[in-house]
Picture 1 (cartoon, rainbow, N blue to C red):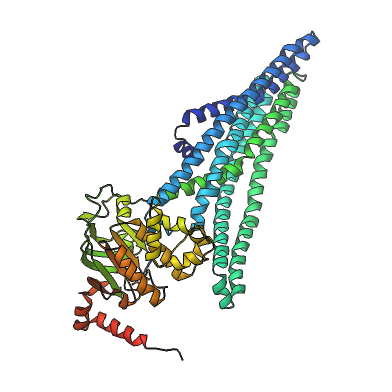
Picture 2 (picture 1 turned 90 degrees about the horizontal axis):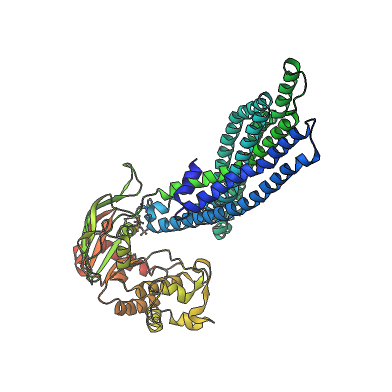
Length: 581
Ligand SMILES: Nc1ncnc2c1ncn2[C@@H]1O[C@H](COP(=O)(O)OP(=O)(O)OP(=O)(O)O)[C@@H](O)[C@H]1O
């Protein structure tokens, strides 16, 4: 039922068609039973003493008509069900993709990339297969089986009832088998996901494993996951097959029970085999066949049901709220007002930021500095609403960013993080992500500002060179420069740079900084940096220590104060003179 409720909720605009298809399947089930029932009637007529060959023709004609009607119904059913099923799958994929866009990144990161990909591929496919083929075969089988059983009862009440009793008795065992099957499917899917995760980690981390001579151990963890998968199959199959076989055997008991009922009739009733006996037994046999065909779809329906549950669970993840628009798109002041934050949803979450307040006036540069783990990147993540604050508020142009339409916030901020992801596409397409409508001249301008022109000139296809998966064909510093070009192109009033130049050599970094300053003039910059030399010119430096602001101000004043910033600065100055012997 859950599966069909799920399908129903995604039948946007196709509900009528799908219902028409279902009605056609219903009739098709009846038309599948019709030839057998008509043949049964013909058998009864032919066993009469006064029967002539001509008596058979109306029945023959009725069988042909029922078959022709069934062909038409199959066509109508499948046409509508496939359209409806296609619409459901499309709607599921679109809703999941749209939801991914709106769920806070903090929540999204709890779903691994493999699980998210699975929602859009395998899970959506199971829903398609269930809503089209499996559901129709199951419904047609049940309708046909029930129609044949009713006909059997009508032909001969005791014999038909004996077979119906067997069918009724098989229901609990079959329901139990369905429950075991669903449990096994759930565990198998979890094992496969775990196995995929492990093999993904093994493939991605192969360089690390090799450098530590740990490839064997890493492979072992994958092997363990594969063994779990096998154990689930081996452990789950015997009880499932036993219960399923028991259910089917009880169902198959329909014919022997019908024969026993017939024998009882002979012994205690009519004293002769009634004319309806043979057709009734045939109808019972056919009805068992129809029920078995319906049962054969159980595994697919069970798998699709699990997929529906998983899709529902993802679609129930809360999305970023807020609907307000910004009053203007430029000169936006950003402010932290007594912001506290801890990762994790419950009260036990460790507080990462405590009572953070600072203002970033439009057009100024604010640097966030502090030791590793102090909470600098967390500040950037909160500005971007990857997470929402635990208490206090962050405002943009006076408006709490939680009340802002997420797309207004996204439009106002360009972000370059520590990990740069490039898509397997041309360098041009990767940079144009910042502004797909940018002119060629503007593109070249940001390429030059990001100090990418030498790289572009050296590449055989220049900007049209495909950069490999995740940008792996470029060096770390080159990837960072592509991300900076992308952010510059976006033309957002606020740019957040989180260790955006950490992989760039000092000479290129200096040149990039100068060019960047020209292109980003008038924009607000929030820079998270370890190399203090790069932010010494900032309008305000906010110094963090274990999640708290311990001082803030301009470089010269902070040096004079002799606090944490001065200590960090002096330590870096000394480190610059270090050498490896
Ligand atoms: N997604 C997360 N879930 C749980 N804890 C996190 C998460 N991200 C960061 N933390 C923790 O929050 C604290 C602050 O991390 P953050 O990345 O903000 O520090 P940082 O100052 O930017 O450090 P670094 O300079 O090393 O990048 C750290 O203790 C870190 O372990």
